[in-house]
Image 1: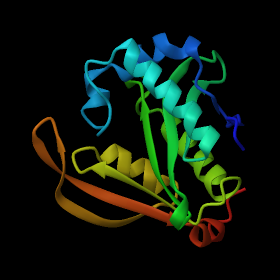
Image 2: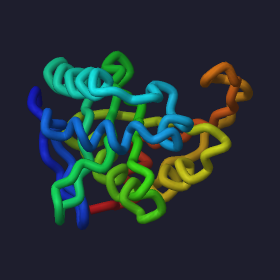
Image 3: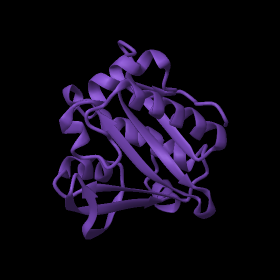
Image 4: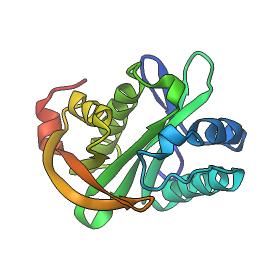
Length: 185
């Protein structure tokens, strides 16, 4: 699995990030509202940032350290976000990360994409655990995790620093055993 795979959901296509996606990446990832909730999202967001992310995704697939998918609407094939697994192969686990453009918030797209990536992670990627974090001030992200069976494992006070401010985070996790018990087809 050294090349990106494509996953189709009811409304989305998850797959490789392409050079032709750069304008959409800049447009949607560049929004201040997107960057304020993410640790590694620069703002302002430039073409060089999109190129870096594109290269990171391609290298990650090659060395199996990251499985990063572009999120596209099936109807238009426009890239609207990204979702990925950052693998810690020593422990057979990965951290789930994601973002989506502001015009697509609140429509269930991210829950749909995360569900597909969890299935991929426990199936094709052979992971035992997938975890994710979100800032306490972003409860919508926690809802995405909960909707997909992830369980809140704890809260960490002033655990990260974003733009000079210390933020509290919540961590959610899901094991392969628990995922399989959910009996999702």
